Image (cartoon, rainbow, N blue to C red):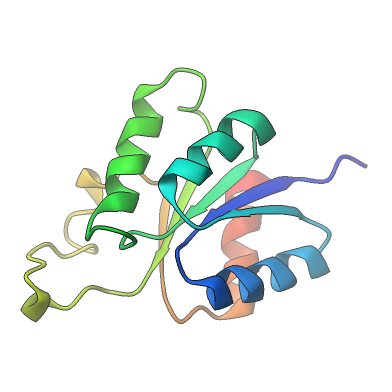
Length: 129
């Protein structure tokens, strides 16, 4: 059987570790990257079946910019994207609401941190099975 490949891009090492452990337990092949630069290299070389992406890394919207960039590249545009991020606080100067404005996010699904492992698995299957 061909194992599905998932790339996780997140700057939180413990999140990468936890997510990888959950997904590998269910026989997914997992690659991780801690920045969008490293993520792009792995995206091009590994050709994952799914991308799990954090929004706030080096900048407030690094993940959103990365997802938009991916959608503009023909070779990467078909890879499903699941945003997995903490809901940003309005008092940190973040004015948009993810629920209300999903249309400006170039992603297929949004999950809020902290994640529930069963919900994560459900959403992964939804996007790549």
